[in-house]
Image (cartoon, rainbow, N blue to C red; front, side, top):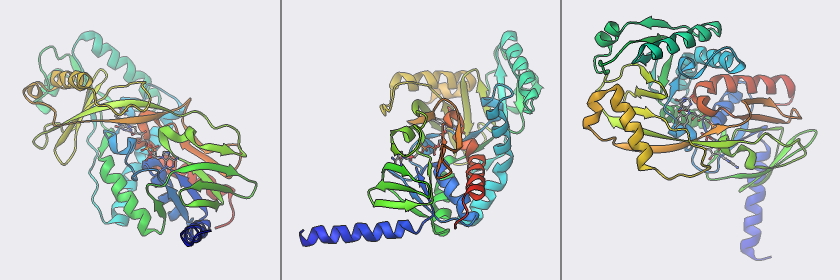
Amino acid sequence: MSQDGEAENLKAEEQSAEDADDSIAVIGGGLIGLSIAWELARAGWRSTVYEKGRFGGEASWAAAGMLSPGGEVEGPSALASLAIESRDLYGRFVENLEQASGLGIDYQECGGLDLAYSPEELRVLEERARVQAAAGIESRPVTAAHIVAFWPRVRREGLAGGRFYPKDGVVNPQELVTALAKACRRAGIQIHENCAAARVEVFEKGATVESCRGTAWHDAVVIAAGAWSSDLEMRGAPAIPRAEPVKGHLIGYRQPEHTCATIVRHRGTYLLQRANGLLIAGASVEHVGFDRELRDEIAAGLAGEAAFVFPHLAETAPSEVWVGFRPESDGLHIGAWGSKRLLLAYGHYRNGILLAPVTAARIAAEINANLQTR
Ligand code: FAD
Ligand code: GLY
């Protein structure tokens, strides 16, 4: 073997030894994977995060950032309970992260307003709210006059009324993942960016991860690779559920502060404004695989819907257009899969930002309960 080859082997062995020290491997450094690693660190576990690109650079970077059981949950379900639980955890989650990272996070307990532009739309909102109330999601009716007074930029023509969801909120997911990555590093978690995991093998007493850093032994592996989760080669475990990308376009406008002080929704369109002024409107729902192309016609459709709600936006073009891939599966997977050494954390689809705290808490609780060694 050449000297270069020997040096490479030595380096790979050193890297594997470094990783072997870590108890838990987390595959995927999006919001879900990073939240899990951080929660594990808070519970005393060491972990390594493998991220094939830049931490948080996929769906978690693209997301609008609604924390919105009111907008996303239709009625009683397992998702509804988790969404409400996670929403209740959010204030503390953000506060702890700000402290741990020393970074500020734009988090707004602003509420969300659904608009109706016909008696029929109002009836649909009221019926939906009735079913949501059974799931524990509170809302109240708002008259057109009230909306005109408190949301002065909203279209008035044809306004029939609306519903306000006081507990819906907004977070800037980019600030959240940036703070999380810093908090994770400060907590001693190794985040390997640009390092894809290729294969996982599950054994009785642990599991191996094969990645750009060689093969490392871990006490357990958590798969949190979003829409790519089922692309991993798996051995020693039952086949894992398929993950599918669901592409979403979003558009953004630079607007004066308080242009949109709460989430505002009309039918399938939502609008919200970040503290940095970016007013976001979304989103498309496209089953087109991992196609990263920005489509003018889809952005134009979103702009039309945004200008329906806020007529002044008709005078300006969006300054930003972007896409991301929601991780869909046959349901939400949080927990052990065929072995206590393998855990899944994917399938968060439209609500991974909202569900991050509860996902991390559930995975950490399961690892605490099932694995003895630290
Ligand atoms: P991701 O953020 O995609 O992270 C997965 C990571 O795994 C990626 O960084 C990827 O590079 C990495 N990875 C993949 N394969 C490998 C591998 N083999 N090895 C190592 N790393 C790997 N949710 C909300 O709650 N509120 C919203 O308002 C909202 N709006 C959205 C709007 C749009 C347009 C989109 C697309 C999504 C939105 N979502 C929203 C959904 C939310 O973004 C996702 O549910 C959430 O980000 C999923 O987080 P994740 O960490 O599982 O996935
Ligand atoms: N939750 C908003 C979206 O997925 O577009």
